[in-house]
Image (cartoon, rainbow, N blue to C red; front, side, top):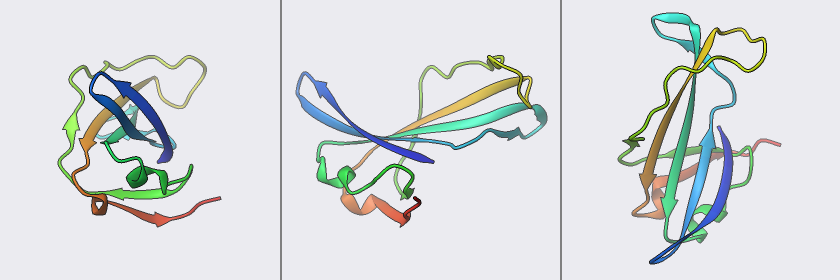
Length: 108
């Protein structure tokens, strides 16, 4: 998954989010004509917990994941593709400890 860290101003202070996105779609189990992708957002009040990650790092995150409330339905591709539709799964997690994240490897 690709890594992206950004600041999000909120009413009670600034939060930091590490966005992870799958590199490519894989066939959906049960319907190989649908491509499945994933996005994960890891939230923290401490910027140092997330700033150690760079784009393209492989990250392992341990914790309680929540599914996004409004999952989007299968969408048609915008250009010719190997799938007739795409389904994106979205998850989020709030960090309690910095040890919930580990860098597996650095990719250039």
